[in-house]
Length: 85
Image (cartoon, rainbow, N blue to C red; front, side):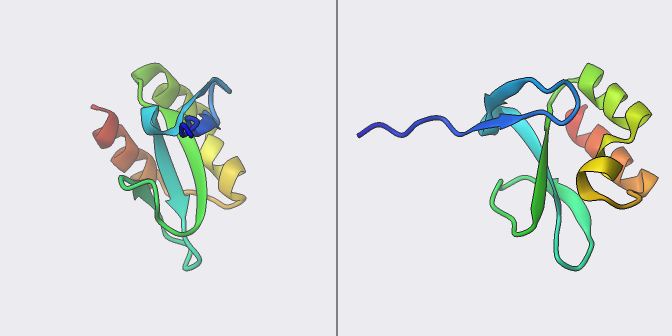
């Protein structure tokens, strides 16, 4: 039996891709928001494409605020930008 690719949707462009091709950002139960490099951290996850265009739209539209239903600090967006570079 073959494993099906785990498809996830980018919160910015709404494009669908294998979850390994996307970057996962997590908000854990303590309210910390961070880039999940393992893809397995506990908490609410949101996925974005690993390209500069989606990142620019993410920052401009504050999409993480909507995804996590809270005000996401600028430092979180800065960390995501460093990961994409």
